[in-house]
Length: 308
Image (cartoon, rainbow, N blue to C red; front, top):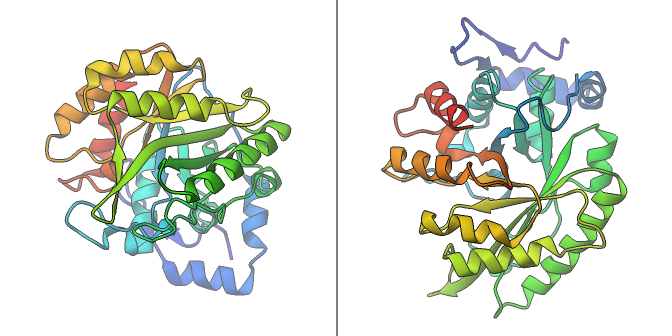
């Protein structure tokens, strides 16, 4: 079976392709080595192109059990639909690559959708959304050795810290060792740090300027070398604080897009302003581009690319 068989129906530059989940399942069942073969054939590219900017589409939420988009609790549960949206986004000019877990990246490899794209593996997904152990965020996804074996281009780890939760120390320690291992393999690792706290049993992320500043300082100091470390940072609650916040580190950074809410234009304005800061190199955006409120993935992606 051709690795491109499960993907068909591309009728135009902006047409959403049709993904055949049955064909993917048959390939996986009969020819599981097809994933490694597709990875070996994949046309690679440098992490940064001529523009020196990065536009990455993120789809690693499902592995933490985080399937909701807006008021739809299981919007990301339909895997064929998610893959179709990802293929549509990856086909747009200016989109550099994708961040996802192994199951999604394996599907995209089989679909032939990753040639010439940056492929970033999501490393720790053990802190399941809403669980009692959410901040003991074990490395249940890609290992550095997996990323190197498959010829992927980078890894990403989530670093959430609650000063009142001992599980944060486990995450902090394992994150530091992952940074060491990635540096040893000369693979970039994108660290996504947050300070968090529990309120009424629910984990809340603090996006105030002081908290984001402190989280950047902690993340920048992980491991024995920061040579291959990037930061993946949110825009603060008050975007006017971003310039001061980003003075905390000289590490290259990408902005975490997050949910744009009802005011999409305001969110794009905040991203545009933050992208002007000297250490900010690009955007990593997921649900707000893949599941825009008006359903137009192409328009959402093209608008985000234009900000760069």
